[in-house]
Length: 368
Image (cartoon, rainbow, N blue to C red; front, side, top):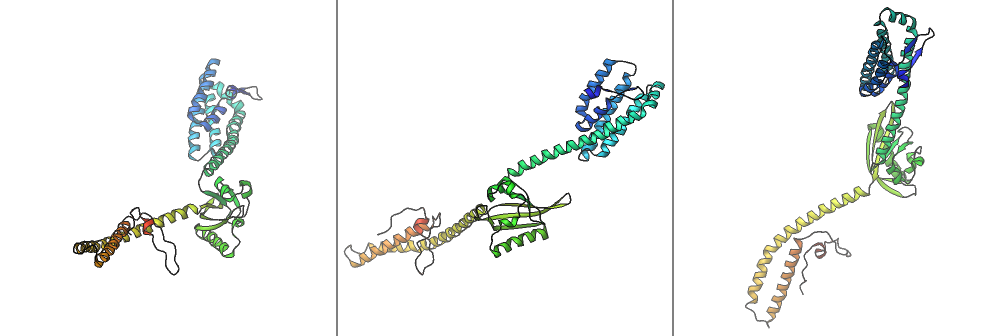
């Protein structure tokens, strides 16, 4: 408000209103809503001062606000305030101020003739140069905010993110998860060569070199189960994705990685589920094929039992056969209800076998 209501005295003793310069600057950076408020205050002040030339001052205020609003829209489309925006606005402010003096008639033209150079200096220096300097300050503040926002986002990522110079293999930046996996602080990681984390075995280092070469040649590379050495010296396996990007003429390698434990556990669970399904389907089909003739065998044994006495040797043989058939029926029932894969204890010379009793949910007493 102080700048808007201030007046500039020229060497010729002429007082010039400086309200258009700060008004144009405010509008350039903040837009028309702020310009509306900023225009109301000096306009009310000028009306309060009164005078025959008050209407010309009000006109110059409106013109400066309109020019600043248009320059604001232009600058937003171009991604920010640039020298061309500030210079154009300063010239427009000078022209509108000159026009407001000209509207006063001969007296206004006389004032312009005597004060055009200070007026031009006020417009160009006050609007153009100050806008550019203020724009640099705003850009730096926005850059700081953008960096803080970028830092906050990548630090919340569940995967480790590392930015590397692809030419020197020096670490440029890392996120919090990278520090947690590696065991180093961010300060200890930045500037360190990524090869420090490679294992010492030549064949394992060759795998890492091949992945980096692929990323350099194709701009992208992916690796699974790669050995990675932590700060404690412990070797873990990680899955990584590498991508080469260009930003403002400089190349960066973005490395995103995570421990392989989760993937390996998921793959193991998926593989076991597939094995279980295959075994269950096979066992169910086999049980169906066995159950049909088994029903005939059990029925025939029951018919024979009716014609034999309980004290005959053949009856004892028949009872044993019937008990064996019942045991087969129990095994068949278990084969149709396999819910997990449990192996029997390994025996010398024999491959691992499925333990039907441990692998099924059927609980029945074993036949004597």
